[in-house]
Image (cartoon, rainbow, N blue to C red; front, side):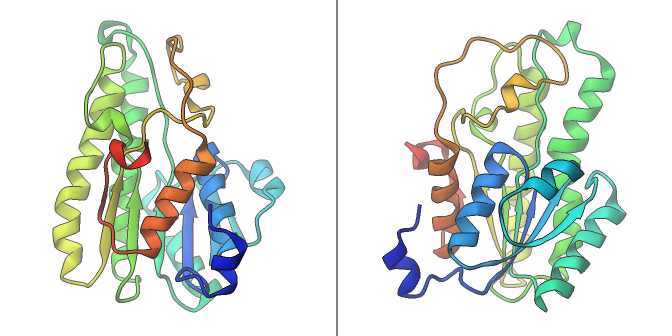
Length: 234
């Protein structure tokens, strides 16, 4: 978390236009709160209209389902209209499912890949042409993208695909002077694991504090980092 003295001295994020997707989630809301303290100009997006209205963070709010390509384009346009520009896109949207692959429904598999893999691709596609020179795209595949686990095979595969996308996107975006950050924090206490699409939540050790994880990601935004492996959060 940035301290008050750092903010008063002029934080690099102050005045930057940031689109936060998944702004009502455990990690998305922590990122939004961190950036608000840094005086970023926020556009906050979530599927959950009531949670979005209740979010105690200043910013322009949009209730959108970003699994729709047109919704991604609408979110980007709204961020540009709100702030006059777009500097950063943070994608903190995600879903999880647990259980052996033989027990997992096709519907859950499709939802995992639509949300965890295709949504980041669609949002990046919509944002690339609008981001300012020196802009940043942040995706958060998480530690599961580094090493998949039994009982999470489809979930881990959807996140590993997102990580692979970031690897190539970073090279493409570099031509536009846009930076891509791939963040892979270890298990974090966001509450997501308790809301699986399907299956029983396995016993897990206590996760990281989302406030601390958000601070690491936001500090990377303010610097020149392009990769945040799981070891960067410990």
